[in-house]
Length: 119
Image (cartoon, rainbow, N blue to C red):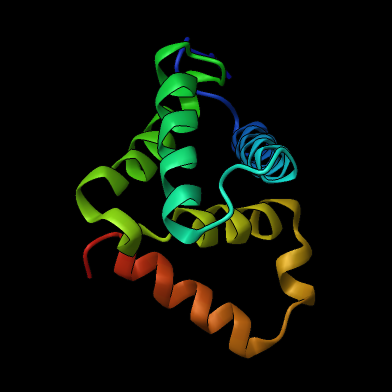
């Protein structure tokens, strides 16, 4: 399998997405422990700044750049983008622990994903 500079095998892409989500959630939690990003609006602002810097500095593989770009659409949607929820749901969906969650949770997650895509 020939690998180009912007593609990864599916399992590596999932691993990169899981790592990305983990990093974002850890960065947010660290900011909260420092007394920042405590309100929903501040959490959104922090995550938008973090995503922007991450994207500009190309900290993650190019294969997940489109995922980061979709999260950056939170600029237009504001709090309705639900960045924290999306990142919080991305982690279990990439690590495989999503199957251990209830059917209701998985259904809500699927609906949130569709809504975030403009459905």
